[in-house]
Image: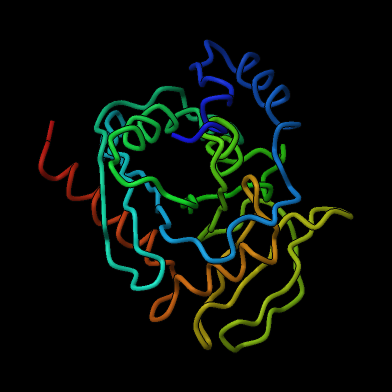
Amino acid sequence: MSAAAQESPRFVVPGSVAEALRVQDELRPLVDRAGPGPTAPATVAGLDVAYAESGDRLAAAVTVLDAATLAVVDEAVSVGRPAFDYVPGLFAFRELPALLAALDRLTVHPDLLVCDGHGLAHPRRFGLACHLGVVTGLPAIGVGKTLLVGTWDGPGPRRGDSAALRDGDEVVGRVLRTRDGVKPVFVSVGHRMSLANAVDRVLALTPRYRLPETTRTADRLCRAALAARPG
């Protein structure tokens, strides 16, 4: 990891809901919302987690793509068990240990993390993309398939159309159309990125499909890892 990552806070699995809430409160001020973040990253990592049907096993995958060609240049997987109970708003604590283990196994250093989840578009303004960005020191964005918090008007029907995602008076992300006439995705800042740059990066990662290639490749990898290691 980079020097910035080495100076970042260490992740510790909380022992209770109260402790998890305290950790979020302590780390939230460390989120860099100003960015602007890398506008021409050489490599972009996708992060995703798949769960066994029983819910007691997971596989966390990281795929690193060449940002120009979108070819996978590195990948890593960590298979284990959820580190924390399922609690709305605290979902990141279940997945972070496995995702961090997968990141540590990479040989290619990513310039940007793209999480299958949310960043600031979170009830406590500290979703998975924020948590990962803060503890790794890397620029990070969240791209959610479904809404977690907020309301919006629009966007238009064409690729690239977007609308502000608002929670009360605060803009917490953008609702982005990545394919003509296809339902949008929810983009939010995680760490060391501006929202405008995050939207541009997501459009660059979606030349053919609704979801970023980073998410698609990481999703395939974590599902394959679970299938290869049943039980």
